[in-house]
Every structure is written in C-alpha cells, then in structure tokens.
Image 1 (cartoon, rainbow, N blue to C red):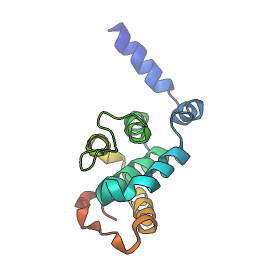
Image 2 (image 1 turned 90 degrees about the vertical axis):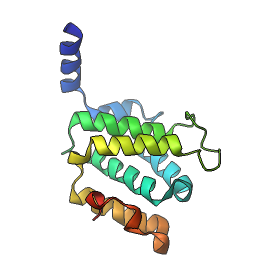
Image 3 (image 1 turned 180 degrees about the horizontal axis):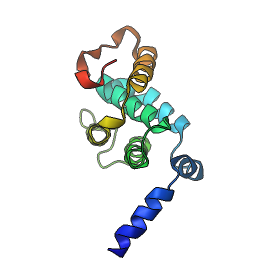
Length: 143
C-alpha cells in the first residue's frame, strides 16, 4: 500500500516537459522526427499517422500526465536504435514498433482531439504527398 501512495505522489509531481529536457539524449522531438522521416514509407501510413497523433497529444498541455507517460514510452520505443525485432528485418522489422504505437494510441484515445488529428493529417500530407490515403486510418482518428 505504501508503494502505491508513493507512486501516486510521484505521478502527481511528475513534469513530462522537464523529464524530456533531462533525458534529451534518449528522447527528443528532433530524434523522433528524424526517425519518422527516415522510416515513414517502411512503417506505412497507418503507423506514421498514429505516431504523429501520439506526438501531438504529448505536446498538448491538455493531455493528462498518465497519458503522456504512455506516449513517451511508445515514442521512445519507436526511436530506440535497439528493438525487440530489429527494424532491418524485411516485412517484420517494424511489427513491434507498430504494436507499441497501436497499444499506446488505444490507451490514450480520450486524449486525442481534432486539433491533434489536423496536425497529424497536415504533417502526413507533407511526408507522403499524393500517396497519402486516409483509407487506412480508423474512422475515430480521422480529421
């Protein structure tokens, strides 16, 4: 019981922005965007769009701390150079990344708003151009 109370206090005092600043070496907006740009076509429209939704949700001051922790973990996993399944493996290399992104997205769905959807949609149009087709996107996450 004491550990739960300590965890609650730590969560209450947790500052996601400060944590990111302190851990910039492991996680940064620049690293995330660089990896997304490099691998967007390989990981596909769906995973790219959903990861952008998570990214914009993380940046929003309206997103609850618990959701930001989930998002930071998922996006952190996406940019880590070491994965459960190496990204270099054809066809399955990004399966673990996709699973982490999907799981995180569905656990923070209530934190995703229309502004975030629009931001992700706009970035996707820049990344994929005419190849960007929202048919792969779940209706509840479309603009």
